[in-house]
Length: 463
Image (cartoon, rainbow, N blue to C red):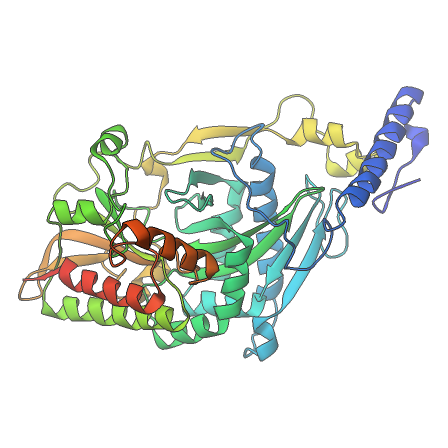
């Protein structure tokens, strides 16, 4: 009798345990056969699978539907990134931009993957390209894996937008794992070559910094695609005000009621205008900022991308971190200590590796509040290589003589995976019936980019 490649010695079990084990294995096999008959597309490796969806949830914790997903994501990243990082460095080839490598994980392990808590399949896309991108962004591979997978601790926050995506933050707040729709995944693979070339030519780019593209599939479940990105905000500073600017005004207002309910509420374009908000730069920094925004937007226009925004975080240097704004914002989830007698995986293998026994021993998670004292006191090393992140993780405001002023800004152009496709064209046509088509968000990329640039020019106040 075999269980996923591991021999089970039934002589070690009493009659009751034998019966229970055999019943469990029989049931699992029957479930697999039934699932294969019912879902003919479930195990297809085709990236055009129409059943691909992102996983939706609000908070990770024991019993939360996303806890297993989080664990499997981190395990897959650890093994996939470790494998490519261990290889001898080489130049990229055209095939690297379209490559995909599949890993299969189960509780017993094999020669390619270790034994893990849950069964799942993991796919790593363009692994060599993302290795080069991490190097371009000065990300050390050991630090990258340690930040994401040390103690398997992440926080989860729902997206403030309408995409249904979720963000998982690494414990040190450096990296974000974002679930994305299959169409976004497919689009990123399509434009990856141009994105890579742009990063090589623009080390100070404000575009989202992508560090990995992956897919995970749970047993009998749908596929979840996700990217690993750099966090625009550093862990060492409170963000006193946050804006998300698209350069459009229709529907771009965060209400006073929402602001009163949530002091972390993200403000939008109409709030920016109503508050007479400005980015205060002297001539040198203003030119640096606007010229980089221009180059970034030219790429997005060329790639037929729209619906992106500039995320801005304001830190008032005079206020500092005294208010502890991050303390009630960062809630982490981790696999905590188990209770009762713990058995090793090897011992469990000899006893039959029963799924319910393994889950009883290993599946314990605790939601904990992380304090700012646990966060790094200084920005991460890679930020100092970008001019817009080099001042304590951001860039300081400046006066007419380009001397430092009292604001610290954190910039990033985010949500850059939305092409102007048939859905957006239909949205544009529908909203244009009742609204001024120059004020709505969904417009063709050339107009969107030009409007965005004009808004950014007006947003910067040169002292």
